[in-house]
Image (cartoon, rainbow, N blue to C red; front, top):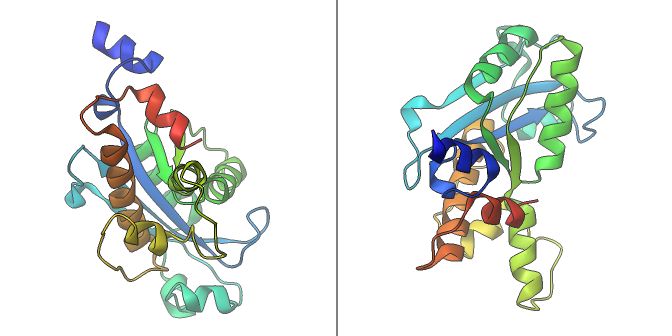
Length: 205
């Protein structure tokens, strides 16, 4: 049990922690009020991403959609046949409770999902969060690279690690892309020196 205590305290290897990349799509850009349309989760077992264990939930939505839904490749017909919000969130909770969640611009996803969980009276307790955007921002700031307007998009961040282009703006593909970026960031940072969980989390705060 000592290794488990070390992980809980952040002193063990980051690879022994439970990681899950997530992404959610909403009917707008206001995390405090726009409706949740879909959510995806992708577990990470370094150095692997077991896609067979990933999940995706399309959420039932009857209100008129705006341009944001079109960008996310979602139609009114698809959403009408989605899961009720409480059921989708229960699936997410089951897959992620106790895990460290990874997202690109994590503050948005965290605000959206915590608000939805509260609305549905679901007690959701992930162990922590890692933001791939913040981690990359720190790397660029340390290298004194001038940050352009699109320097920190998921696609641009991935390109700096030689990761393949991906078809974005769908929760599942974005979650997979984020998982790949997280592994690339962490293994590059690690080099030949093992990283503790605390060291990795500090990069993505």
